[in-house]
Length: 390
Image: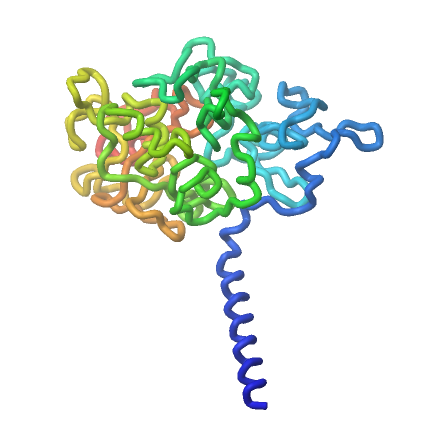
């Protein structure tokens, strides 16, 4: 009899531990797609004589009734470019919108609608990444600015190939398909990730599914609402104290192993941007005059540095409360959001100044550079870090 009671107590303790573990992980599972399969997939694209693949903003080039790969009811922008709000609920799941006209604000990555002119001060190629998914090819640039060497290989990342996900994109699997060396794009490039991904602390980054925002190899902390609202509600980014060195072989800066494809070898968001914009992020070396930010990770720089520590001296010491106009990266992936900036420890990164998708300002900046007037008494923008130059 005693043995039976002991076994029952043991079982109850195990159940309690499982319950507590589930509760503690609640915030980290919100990014995983849940709900009926029919919310996202259609078997034959037909129901009662009506086409089912109809997701997407009305009148936009990614909206239609045609079929999609992986049996989905919409391609990337079919689900993430519905356009009526910055977050749209489909069948009980909240879907972040990277193209929308919602006047209440944009998500942390920005908004492709500024490029097309559907939102903001007017259409402009300079406002963002001109992914071909939005139907507006860049008329000025034909390759990534700051390109050091086109790392993808057989075909180039250009104004006619840049896309949301895949070989010539940012999210998911960034590699030519084996064995025929054809590019991968769209939903197949992120296959399975929506079903396994978690939000919160992303510090493994061994595949696109467990990397920050499906960016292969990138670590960080994902805010579950996809927004950078204020000091207490924002993403947390991972950074290092020394930028990559001048290009010395693909294995050193973009191909750590053949299976994973192109990724950030140092696991930082700036290192990820480096795979296309190498000259803007690297330390100059090997006699490559004019490339990189400079020869060392301290001033004077010839380009604005990334993946270096914000000095704990002079004007920089004044940046102590997190400002979403100039986000910082951390040396260790945090387990929660912090409202504090620590000069001498925290790091400047490419997203300190730029958005990832698009903004209403040229060069995808978070603010209007033309209003940054030294000695003019302004605030925010550049003056968030350079606190004594306003």
